[in-house]
Amino acid sequence: MPDTPTPAPDDALAALRRAMPIALGRFDPAAQRTGLVIVDIVNGFATVGRGPLAPPAPNAQVDRMIAEADALARRFAAAGWPVLATRDSHDPDRPEPPYPPHCLRGTGDDELVPALEWLESAPQATILPKDCINTYVGAIETAADGSQRNRLLDWIAANRIEALLVTGICTDICVMDFVLTLLSARNHGLTAGLRDIWVYERACATYDLPLATAQRLGLPETAAHPQAEAHHMGLYFMASRGAALAGEIA
Image 1 (cartoon, one colour):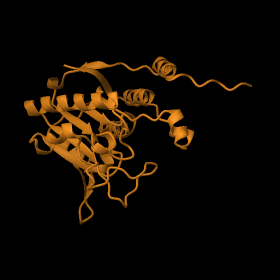
Image 2 (cartoon, rainbow, N blue to C red):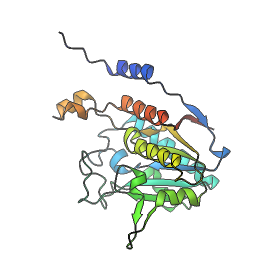
Image 3 (cartoon, one colour):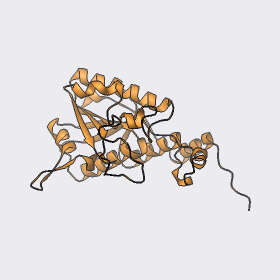
Image 4 (cartoon, helix red, strand yellow):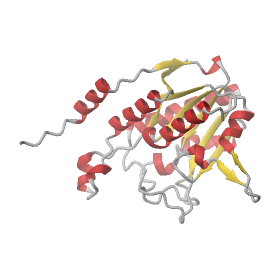
């Protein structure tokens, strides 16, 4: 039996869009108490050449994400609305397989990209370093007496947030883990008054590792991660679990 030809990237994306359609709506952050979440837009993921998981060359999807997230953050700051920016930040002795060491504390790779550095001193912004993919898990803080608190849930409650607008990288990894876990926590009554979780497509991005590149690098075929398809799949799975997708911000 002849081998099945590998579909061209455009064909694969078109097939995904037909089989797993998504709908992008319009979100108005002024309609309810909204908080903006910026997931891991740090140098180690979004600045060219800054570590093994950073883009090796300028990438249009990543550049668009940074510009859109910056514009949103400035709008929220000007309106006095709350912003939470997470920073993937690891100690060298805390590996995160299957990924190589990345965003190591003290290297600068775990710092916000230059366009978002202003958030570090913005009064409306909370910066949340975390040492794992999942922001909900990374926000758990254990005190000396063994008691625990979740800084993410504390931020939602303190700001009486009713809706979250989520942006960041990677659409299908850190962003998706955060959204899916928070949806489950909301459904379980753990998120105070939070009702709606929106994901802004234009302010999300993921990395690009086509199959041919993975093979050339000697990686297993399962390491392939075509950017457009992975981005679409992340959006689809978040929407299928109850998140709303925004293509436009009012």
